[in-house]
Amino acid sequence: MSRIGKQIIEIPKGTTVTADNGVYTVKGPQGELKKTFRDDVTITIDGDQISFAPSSAKSVLSKALWGTYASIMKNMVQGVNTLYEKKLILEGVGFKVDVQGKQLKFALGFSHDVFVDIPDHLNVTAEKNTITVTGIDKEEVGRFTANVRSLKKPEPYKGKGLRYSDEIVRRKQGKKSA
Image (cartoon, rainbow, N blue to C red; front, top):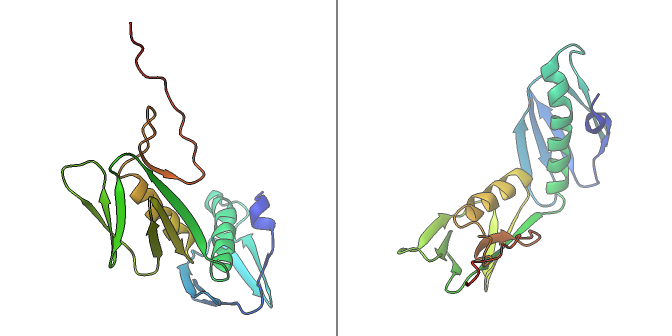
């Protein structure tokens, strides 16, 4: 039994949730999100509440998707009301980041600058060596920050590279002199 799937999602005021042939649209003050869900889970919208139930009690797939769909829908409702935000910190001597139009320009110690395109529905700002990514889609914000972080992961000896603001890099001791 899914504990997350059993929970009923409350729809806040100013937010509307509609369904049309498996495509669910959530509109709120921050924007609009659309997502297609399979019919393995029955999603019921009653006034200002959303509930979930597996369409077949014996199907392993419907039981697996029950909590997943509930979590995705909860993130959609929350995202159109308050923006999701992730921060990356760039550490290292000579490492820099700038926002140029719809691209991020990185100087990461390579022989060339690295450019990353910013998706249209995300807001990205770079102040000093802190990159802030905000958006209404939790999945997209997380995916973009993970792709940016993968350019230069933090190394364990000096901690140089891109890391999340709440990430703790475990340091290793360097070579010992004889």
